[in-house]
Image (cartoon, rainbow, N blue to C red; front, side, top):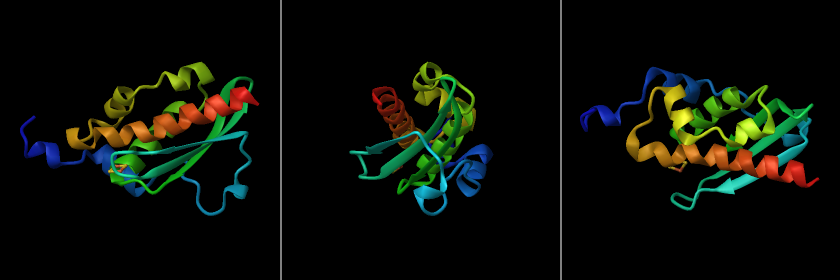
Length: 131
Ligand code: FES
């Protein structure tokens, strides 16, 4: 891919940014969750919160919210779709590359944004297991 193309978001990225799946609109009390993970991105200072509802060891439902950029929003939207119905072990093993592949590749300089949702999800799973 040449440098010019690396500035372009794929249609899938744009769709997930403009129509984020499983985004938590409004107050977190509107979602019945079992654990919440929180992470900040030291590169840009953005924050991510991930809320999980667990049933029989699997992610039954999931919500998230962030101050992050378009890439973080699209990446976390994709992650939330990938995580639903998976076991806790499976979701912590979803990689940034899995998310990047799902989205049809983020621009390289925005790849770090895709880590934010994954770290928040891993934190939520860790807190759920500690309960
Ligand atoms: S630049 Fe901060 S999450 Fe993308």
